[in-house]
Structure formats: structure tokens, C-alpha cells
Length: 113
Length: 257
Length: 126
Image 1 (cartoon, chains in turn cyan, brown, green):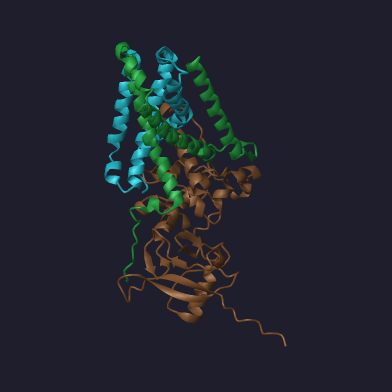
Image 2 (cartoon, each protein chain N blue to C red):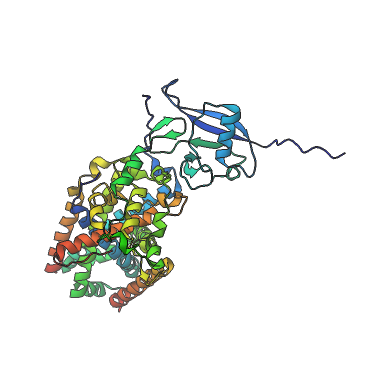
């Protein structure tokens, strides 16, 4: 009702929206690259490694992974509420926490690479 | 001799939701056989039933031309204005008429829409100018372009069909709902208004815009093409951006529309 | 005071109407998005260890990998197409008195998507 304002609402919504844009724009081509270009022979092992290791692609991959996970967290927990599984869906920390863990892992991996 | 005009033999079967708490605990369906005319709407058939067959049937209606918002009911599972819903859409199939979904039923086809009405006032649906002009200075002026920004959202006739179509409201009646939020956006986008911040108390609430998951059926069933779903998405971006700016650049003044 | 009758939304509300169902499918594409994001994490983790990357790369050439990728691709494409189609609803742009056509906004987003995809593919495959 009136008055129950939470800063987390616009915050996670913005992350969801950013993740939606990033995953919509970048994921299809990536899936084609790892799922079709490799088996068909257009992308070699060396080519793939080179592409991953480049600092620009490390940054892009980090952004894609992190924002995509936050996009999933927000959208999926509300889907659970709509499916009648609100008891799980309302446990926001569970979902955003998982996305946060993924983000930390991604950061560590991309720095270490 | 010319043969006489044949009696209208075309009939339609109306399956109507009945709930009479003074007689029975549970609702039931009652089937009425009414005449069919190609220019009849569902409301015509209901009025025929009430006038000629069963005066105990209760339902709301008024203008019978799609502007008052009184005659909203579920027709074959979809929220419709019965004065605008032609029998020929369904004929010769059966027409099932029920009260609007997601609202309590008082009797027969009559809903209790107090919750919806109450929510409209919580968004402060009146102009709150930045500076109140004294009367002597005349009207608040507005260009056609400024009017166009919010006009669509001002067309709401408060029929409640959007609430009947919205599964989020169906699951959680504390959701502020499509019409109320579209109404808030109507004022936020009005160039004469400066009350966006004050509306935030309701609109930014956890049970307001953030609860909407953009199913979009509110827009699909709206008889006045208000597009409440679009209004809510605009509000999400608008309020989220304001919030981000207020956090990152607290000293930036001025109001964003 | 008579008792009002409350009808609950049925638990399976989302399978009973086409628009509700396609909405739910759209929302559940987020699982495919998360799945591929996790795959990318695994990919980068494997890339850090040169010795085992070869086996991982070979696995990406297996029929199972291709099928999985295509299923995920179908779902992510549904996400992309519905996302871009809804963009004009949230990005209402006005030029003076007129509103920029929603079709134009969607079309330019689809174009941007094609351009970005092309650039990424070119950068990776060359």
C-alpha cells in the first residue's frame, strides 16, 4: 500500500533492465559462436582462447555474466510469485545472493585469467 | 398474398452466474434462452432476461454506449463491457456471463469494486502545480503537444476490466493496479503538474509499479485504449532513473519528467 | 449484511489463456539466460587451465552440446525478440510535439542487435 517504499525495488529493477538489454543484444551471437561456430569449424581452440583472453572481451564477458544473472534473479523470483510459489519467490536474498555470488566468481575468474 | 415476416427463430443460450446470498451459500449458473438479433449486445440479452424472464437477475449498467464503465462483466472468460459486446461474436455458441474476476461478488453479476475505487485516490489524481497561480493570472496554459504526452492515459472510464484481467492483482489484492497507476502517470506527464514526487509515496511503494510483471492483459482488455501497461513501464523507468540520480548526484536539482 | 463471494484466481491461471501462457514462457526464458551465463563462467574457468581446455573444447563439438545450445538459443531468441518489441513501451521519445513512432524505435533496436552481433562475430572469428 502507500508508504512501503524500498530502495531495493528500483535498484534491482535497474539491474534487471540492464541485464535484459545486455543478454538480449549479446547472448544470441555468443550462443551461435560456442554452439555452432565451434562444431562447424569456424572457430578453433586457439581462436576461442584468444578471444576469451583479450582484456576487452574479459570485461564484456564479466558484464554479460553478472548482469544476466541479476536479470534472471529478478525475473525468475517474480515468475515464482506469479506461479503461486511466492513463499520461495519472496525470499529476495536467495536469488540476488546467487547472482551476487556469480558476480564475485566471475570477477575473480576474469582477473585471474 | 405476401407471406408474413417470419417470427425470429434465432435464439441464443445465455449461461449466467447467479449468486443470491439470501437464498443459498454457493453460486450457480442459470441458463436463459433469449432471442438473437445481429445488432444485439450482451447487455440487450441481459435486459431481455430481466424484463421478460427473470426479474431477480441483478447487474449494473448505465449509458449503454461504452463511456460510463458500469457494465463490465466476464463474457466467455474475458473481461468485456457488455454494452459493447455483440452476441454475433459468439452466436450460435453459448454465451457465458459472469461477474468480473478478482473482485468480490455481492450478488449475481454485481461486484464490490471499493478496493479499486479506493486505490484511485491514493495516487493523488489532481493537479499539483509547482506554483499555484492566483485566479487573476488566468488559466494554466498547455500546448497540444503537451496534451498529447498524457492524453491517452486520461481516457480511463474506471470500468475495472484491467483489474479483472490482471493476474498480479488476482494473486495479491494489495497491488495498486493498472488503472490507478496509469492515472498517476497521467498526472505525472501533465505539464501543469508538479506532484510527481508526492505521488512517489504510493507509486514507488513495494506494492505499486514494482509488483507489475508486464503481463500486458490490462492493455489488451481496455475498452478505451488507455494502455495502462505502457504507463506502468514508463513509470518504472522514470521513477528508477529519478532514484538513481538522487543517489548518485544528490545535488542535481530540477525535476525530471 | 450479506456475505460476499470471493473467487480465487486458479493456480493454473497461466495455462488457461494464450496471452498468459506466452507471458509465462517469456518470463521463464530468464532460466536460459542464467544457464548460458553459468556456461560462460565455466568456459572462462576452463580457459584458465590450459591442460584441460582441449577436452572441454572437444565436448563443445559433441551432438549433445549442439542440441543444448540450440535449445538455449531458441529461448534466448524469444527473450531478445520480446524484449526489443516491448522497448518502445518504455522508451517513449518525443521530438517537439510528435512522438517518435514505436515501430521506428523497435526497428532501430533490431538493427542495433544485428550490428552488435555482426561486430562480435567478426571480432571473434577473424
